[in-house]
Length: 260
Ligand SMILES: C[S@@+](CC[C@H](N)C(=O)[O-])C[C@H]1O[C@@H](n2cnc3c(N)ncnc32)[C@H](O)[C@@H]1O
Image (cartoon, rainbow, N blue to C red; front, side, top):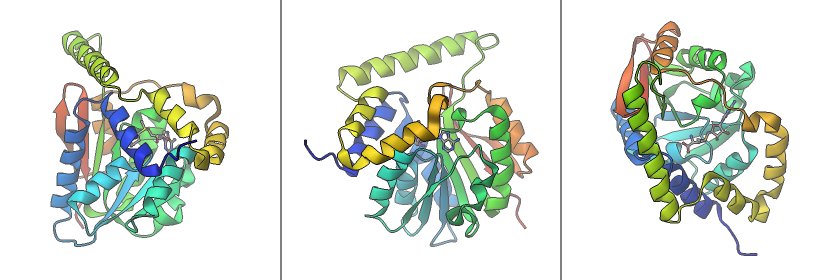
């Protein structure tokens, strides 16, 4: 069996995710630039990547703040095992196995340690039940330093009923992106997981993955709107809330913690 390294799986993960998200690199770049601007006075900013998977966003943000450090928090043992292998090669990275549906996630030592300059997330929080998303957002002001920022990039679908034209255009754009990616030989989601299954060093983590998720792995929660995210962030007490970037239904939502 050939050796499949964490580095090659991470590169294939990024290609696979970009096959579903046309402007993923631009989304990441926007998040990174905003983090760098917010942390301009801090040579060693702390970043928390919520539901960070193998750590793609955390790693990308650190390109913009090379003196910083990042905690990659996720529930999935297999994705975190890959992140941990990448962290073994980069002391700025740390992993935290947490379930954001469980209130105790904020007490994880890596998360409770000190305030963060930025909490970032990508293609992930739509996996939370709407009530859990509200709870997670309510925790964030307590994890950020005054003036710290939340940046969440995700597809926030148009309403098929009230925004039918744009909903159709966004759906067609996603489909054509996926076709292009498939034609260029990029892994599908399932194909990527088959590649992980070929890496013996992740066999135990994959077995734990099945236990940790159970049936939940195949059940998508109800979708929520951009307005839902903005209102949940406002209700959580953020001083400034809005959209930092948008391509069709792909958004980066931001929130700034109140200054002291
Ligand atoms: C599509 S992946 C995105 C990963 C990464 N943010 C990226 O953009 O490459 C979604 C991630 O959300 C994580 N996730 C979903 N529900 C979660 C929960 N309740 N607690 C922690 N992580 C969760 C999954 O384990 C997975 O890593």
